[in-house]
Image 1: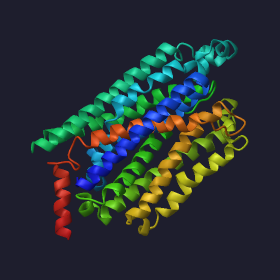
Image 2: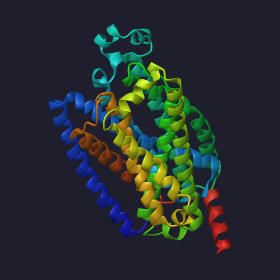
Image 3: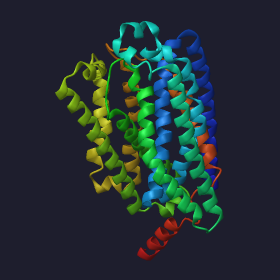
Image 4: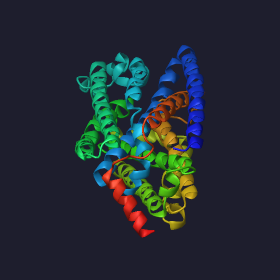
Length: 392
C-alpha cells in the first residue's frame, strides 16, 4: 500500500473512532431516556452492519470456490470486513436485554392473548433465543477466523495447503450458512411479528447481505485505486466482472423479494399479509418506493450498459446507491412493526447506525492494515497476472 493510502486509511479510522464514541454516548443517553426506542433503533442498525460483515463473509467463501477475477483485487477488503465478526457477535448482547421491547413472545401479557405464541413457546423463548444465537455466531466466527488465518499463512509460504484448506472450508461454509442463517433470522427478524410466516424471508436476508457486500467492495476499490498496486490491476475485465456480480445479486434479490410478495398477495392469508400491511400503511409507501428505485430499477438499468460496468467511477455511484439503500431496507424491515401507521424517525435512528458503523470501520481498517493489501502466493491470482501480462 502506498504511503498516501496508508495515511488516508489512518485518518479515516480516526474519524470512525470519533463517530463510534459520539454515537455510543448518544446511545447511552437513549437507553436512559428512551429505552424502547433505543432497542428498536439498535436492532435495525445492528442488522445492517452485521449484514455487511456476513456479506463479506459469504463473498470470501464464494471467491475461494469460484476463483473469480473480481476476488483477486477485493479479497483483502472482504477479509477485513469478515474479520469484524468476533466483535460484531459480542455487539449482539444488548439485544438480549431488549427482548421484551422487541419480541412479543418475550412479553407474558402478549403470550396470554395470542394462541399462536402459546403454541410456539417451546421454541420461541429467551433461553432458546440466546442459545441459538450464541451457537451460530460462534460457528460463523470460527469459520471466519480460520479462513483469515489460512489466508495469512498463504502469504508466507508457496505451499498450496492453505489454499486447499480455504477452499474445503468455504465449500462447507456456503452450505452451512443458509441453514443456520434461516434459524437465526427467524429469531431476530420474523419473530418481531407475533404471527407471520415466510420460508423465503431468511434467504432474502442472506442475499441482501451479499448485495451490500459487493457494493461495499466496489466503493472500497474506488478509494484504493488511487494508489498501487490496485491502479495497475483494476482493468476493464475485472470491473466488468464486479459490475456483473452486482447486477446478478440485484436481480436475484428482486426476484425472490417480488416472488415472496406475489405468493403472499395471491394467497391473501391473514397470517402472511399482516407483515406487508404494516409496511405499506400511510407514508411507509415512500420507503417502499425508495427501495424499489435504488435497490432494483436504477442499478438494474444502469448496469446493463458497458459504459457503467467498465468505468469505476460510474460503477461506484451505483454501488453507493445500493449500499445506502441497504440501510433503508434494514430500517423498513424493523420499524413498521412498532409504528404501523406511518414513518417514525427518532434521533436514535441515526445515533445507533453511526455508533455501530464507527466501530465496524475501526475494525475493518485495523484488520486491513494487518496483512498485505493483496494475497501473496495465491496460484489463482498469479495465473491471472500472467494472463493479463500476456494479453497486454
